[in-house]
Amino acid sequence: MPRGYRPRGAPAGHPRHNGRVTATTPGLAEPPTTPEVPDGRRSPRVVVVGGGPGGYEAALVARRAGADVTLVERQGLGGATVLTDVVPSKTLIATAEWMTIADRAPELGIRSLGQHADSPASGHQVLLDQVNERVVRLARAQSADIRTRLVDEGVDVVDGTGRLDGPQCVVITPSDGEAPERRCDADVVLLATGSTPRTLPEAEPDGERILTWTQLYGLDTLPERLIVVGSGVTGAEFAGAYRSLGSEVVLISSRDRVLPGEDADAAQVIEDVFRDRGMVVKGQSRAVSARRTATGVEVTLEGGEVVTGSHCLMAVGSVPSTQGIGLVEAGVRLTERGHVDVDRVSRTSVRGVYAAGDCTGVLPLASVAAMQGRIAMAHALGDAVVPLDLETVAANIFTAPEIATVGASQASLEESGVRYVSTSLALARNPRAKMLGIKDGFVKIFAHATTGIVLGGVVVAPRAGELIFPLTLAVSHRLTADDVAQSFTVYPSLSGSIAEVARVLHQRRA
Ligand SMILES: Cc1cc2nc3c(=O)[nH]c(=O)nc-3n(C[C@H](O)[C@H](O)[C@H](O)COP(=O)(O)OP(=O)(O)OC[C@H]3O[C@@H](n4cnc5c(N)ncnc54)[C@H](O)[C@@H]3O)c2cc1C
Ligand SMILES: NC(=O)c1ccc[n+]([C@@H]2O[C@H](COP(=O)([O-])OP(=O)(O)OC[C@H]3O[C@@H](n4cnc5c(N)ncnc54)[C@H](O)[C@@H]3O)[C@@H](O)[C@H]2O)c1
Image 1: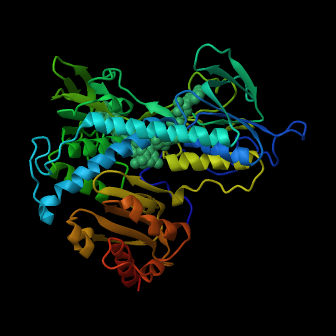
Image 2: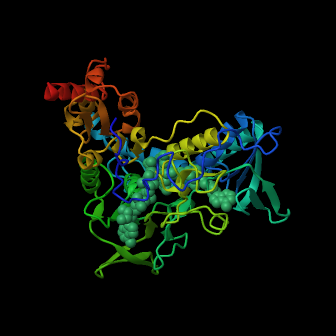
Image 3: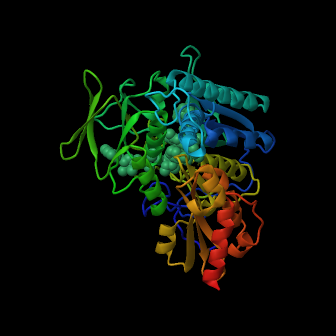
């Protein structure tokens, strides 16, 4: 596949991808060819700072490679991924998805007994206290599972906050505040400290009415009117979910359309669906402040318009957790936005210090964090290394319908000048979609104009995150559109549309 694509949705200079991804980038530390073991006899000592997927996956790999591994985590195993971000949001969205499906019931010939004002279409009412109790319970259980697994594998798990004291020592302040500080010498350090929600100075969250996404799970009743500030992936997912759960929702989008970094056709489908479902979407509107009133919140937009609601969710991005932990003092180079500067094998500017996940700003996905962590350990401990390849990453936005993407985006193909063909078919013509009452969504495939190799794809559909897998296989293994077209699909099935798009691409290239 031609090199030089940016990852989907990442405009030039976007922090998602800092461009420094070659294993031979000047200025970054030389790779150790063997484990960095001073006396050649004892096991290498690895210290991992941060217990999200960037950290815990790496700890497991390092243990299997025979290293002595200490992992320090200040919040809970699984990190923000498990405790506040991915797992809770997707569990909440599972309830929202049920409500969305229930809304289609009348069309499928189902009459509801006992309508309710909170959800007139489906006749179901969401009990947010019970939903959130389930969300928190599942997240904690997953965190406990990860702790058990790490301990069983022999990782020394420490509850505390780590900071570098030079490149080869991590000082741990235990969380209980009682035990003394602990100094851990290390041959290899992995920084996997993640990120925290960005806030605006004039819209400080109070945890009750003005909230970050980490604070949503303390709510025990549904917000009557939720103002969501920010229409990136986080804002769009929560806006859609709360609308499905039964809240009125106002989405404040600073750009022309929601989901500015994503496939334009897919984002348009989501914006249209949002409006159809009664959401107020305010485009080209930037929030400058949010303040509590006697009964709720007021959000003031640039230009002076005031939007009122019962609650406000700030979803205006994240800040890497890289300050105050001795990185600069140890010589670790940070980018202008404060991310740890890494290459494709997760090396920082300091020999023996690696970084993975959101603290690097390469591509903030749990799957990418885990991959960076595994690659770091393979490199540091002398195993075979395949550098990170962002051109095959699959991702999913859990709106209703979902947007799943893999490989090159249309924007990146246009910019790279690669000759490509693309075809898109609406799901509404798919027989199984008709049976299920699905009207919104499409399948789009990009293929190289000469070779027919599948370069990327977009699926907008319920459960698109599952449907994208055949295209992920195609992109990863350089299959052609004809390979996809000639494979059997079940009749009737939504995946039939993937093969159909591939057949149309064959005709277009013929
Ligand atoms: C609302 C939301 C939903 C998302 N949904 C998805 C999704 O569906 N799929 C997906 O792939 N991605 C999703 N993401 C992105 C995903 O959450 C991140 O890419 C992922 O969490 C990054 O993992 P990480 O290991 O880098 O960091 P984290 O999971 O944030 O873990 C870092 C950990 O390090 C700890 N830490 C920080 N500093 C220290 C220190 N000095 N000492 C000790 N411990 C420290 C933190 O407490 C934290 O627990 C979502 C993000 C958000 C905000
Ligand atoms: N399903 C998933 O995989 C998933 C879900 C959530 C997040 N993520 C990851 O996290 C990354 C970050 O997403 P995000 O949405 O949290 O952050 P983001 O930075 O992508 O989006 C924040 C949005 O808020 C807007 N904004 C900033 N200040 C504003 C203001 N004052 N008023 C109105 N709008 C304002 C920005 O223009 C931007 O569009 C994603 O790119 C994705 O990689 C993934």
